[in-house]
Amino acid sequence: MTEKPTMIAFQDVHKYYGDYHALRGITATIRAGEFFSLLGPSGCGKTTLLRTIAGFEGISSGAVMIDERNMAGVPANQRPTNMVFQSYAIFPHLTVGENVGFGLRKARLPKAELAAKVAEALEMVGLGGYGDRAAHALSGGQRQRVALARALILKPKVLLLDEPLSALDKKMREQMQVELIRLQRQVGITFILVTHDQEEALVMSDRIAVMFEGEIAQLADPETLYRRPNSRKVADFIGTMNFLPAKILSEVGDKIEIEAQGFGQLTLEAEQAPGAVSGDGAVVGFRPETLTILFEGQTATDRESMAVIEEVVYYGDMTYYDVKLDGTERPIRISMRNVFGRPVLEIGDRTRVAWSPGALVMFR
Amino acid sequence: MMKGGWFKVYAIGYLLFLYAPIIILPMFAFNDATVIAFPLSGFSTRWFSAMLEEPTLRIAVKNSLFIAVTSSVLATTLGIFAARASTRYRFPMKTGLMGLIMLPLVLPEIIVAVSLLVVLLGLGVNLSLWTVILGHVLICTPFTIAILSSAFQSLDQSLEEAAYDLGESAASTFRLIILPLVMPGIISSLLISFTISLDEFIIAFFLAGTEPTLPVYIFSQFRFPAAVPVIMALGTVLVCLSILLLTIAEYFRRRGIAKSGGKDTGGFL
Image 1 (cartoon, rainbow over the protein chains, first blue to last red):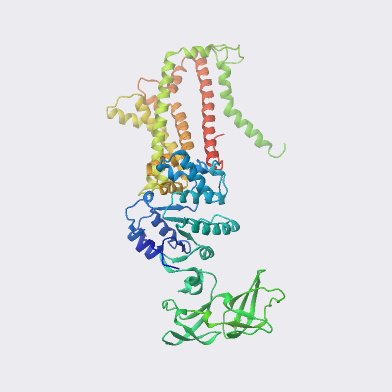
Image 2 (tube, helix red, strand yellow):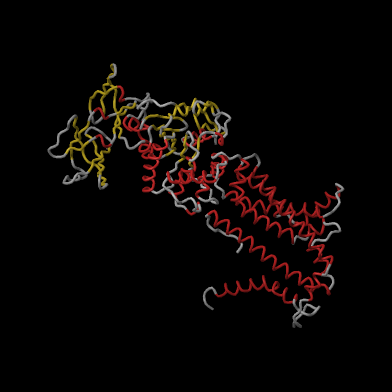
């Protein structure tokens, strides 16, 4: 992918609410045309950060730049951003068409031109012909689309989405995720999404900033974030990760020699230990799907360990096994796709487990 | 007696006590006799024509309407400011200040009236309809704040932010979004304070100077037995007007709720 120009730059942004330090030195750039997500648990400052872009929150120090322009002193109604609110904020006393055309009121367009633009925007979000409906009579998913059309009709440089899918049910949410991605590709506008749902962020984003306690813990593309989280905290927040204690034996060049419980002695590449030293002691981490339970007649392509099954959770398409590798104290989780004709193992069964050093991450 | 029987008796007794005196009002208003006593002697509308020809009554009605309209508009305007401030902004001593503003709700009116009179006379202000308006604004404002606070409270703050985000100024956001959405509350507030002011007696009695208001006029007429049937006629008209007013208020309130798609949770009727 070619490097796109910067659309938004945070330069050491701090925000205090009284004594409370909500944003603690955010420095990051968001590229033009990118689908960017701010991901984190509630209270991590992700919504506050989004609102500093919109201009609803001032900042205590630092700078927020949009398209190379410092936004200090620029009020929300003059910024090249539009927002889709968590509650959608559809004006209940107006029709769908009046809601969508609200932002163009100031432009004083001729009636026919305004109507055409509104119709086009509604068409874009799949609500063609809804213009005359009363806004309060819409369903949740339709409100969301109206909010999108209303924000996009002004052709902002940046579209801000504040947990836009959290009020929808699971099916609707998954459908809207796909539609949002399609819409973003179609209009080419920079989308910034705030979410606490890691799956949503992974599915939709080009890049994700994971935030904890007012700081960005890691900023990376979804795959890097999933495969090479830079801290135990990020690893825990994104998906499931198993941890086993380890000991560093030697570090020579970009090779790290370790002894990990259950795995024995092995050598890792330096890029497999991306995080800073935390002082909690070294651990190796790995995703449940990177280990494979070996059935009769199967052999490991790389390494193999012995384990005993402690718990079986059957999900239909998947089975989750909690197994204890020989020489470890805590069980780890392995996920296996169920295959026709293959038995599901039972608690207490002894089994062989295949693994590969390349799938491990180390935190120290 | 079956279960709940006593509750029925209680409910019917309660309603009788509440409404029987009011039903007696039109009975004697249309009765062709000067004395208020059964049996009724015959149908007549002469008390209504007598009412219309009474010059002092006309002045009293005019005064009362002027006071009620002015007070309700002023009290509602103040109520809008206070309700907006208390629901949107944080400021020091907010709870204490709001408590003090709401206090006239429970303060004995006679105390308010007497102390206002003392202060106004001390300041050398001449008593007039405007001094009554001052007193009525004072007692109506807590009601308007209570009504309008709930209207402003139920307003999603992101609606304002959305309008602002879409390029509107703070003033046009207020006009285009907030005002239409709290309008039912404003109408309720106007009607309630209008009603409070219209039948308020104590403050009007103390602060009106030589200008009578309707309640003060009615009180003064009750000393003359000959005037009582006219008062009955007047009372009948007032009851009808009150019911009409309440119906209008309720109509606007429900329409407001239906328009914004909200759930009906209360109201008068």
